[in-house]
Amino acid sequence: MHIVRVIEQDQFKIVGKICDRCHREAREVDAGTLLELQEFVTITVEPGYGAEHFRDGEVLRADFCERCANALLARYLRLVARPEQIWAHLSSRLLTVELGDSRAKD
Ligand SMILES: [Zn+2]
Image (tube, rainbow, N blue to C red; front, top):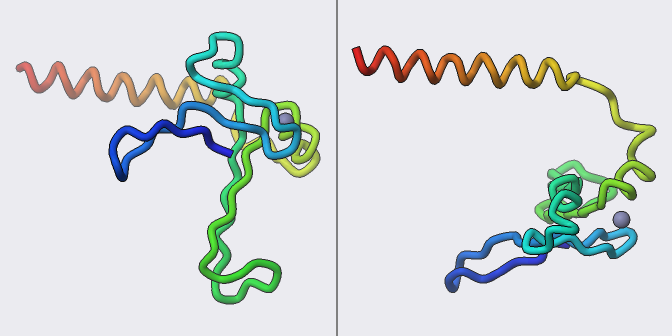
């Protein structure tokens, strides 16, 4: 569950999350739980017309702390990228942006 702060009438900001399994809270203003907040896993289900187990048009969401996400999902998760691959990709994008900036100055 998201903990939100209302900014304006129709605008809000997610400032924390509550695990839907163990009910642990993590908030961005709490230095002790900020890192935990960043590791929360949010699952959103948006069933379509042919759904048999959910209702078409509904949006369902669950938030899990890292510990509960591991307990519930680890057996189903597949490794699709290693950290070094992510960093290489981000570095190449950063390099592209830097080159783009330098070319713009010429
Ligand atoms: Zn939990």
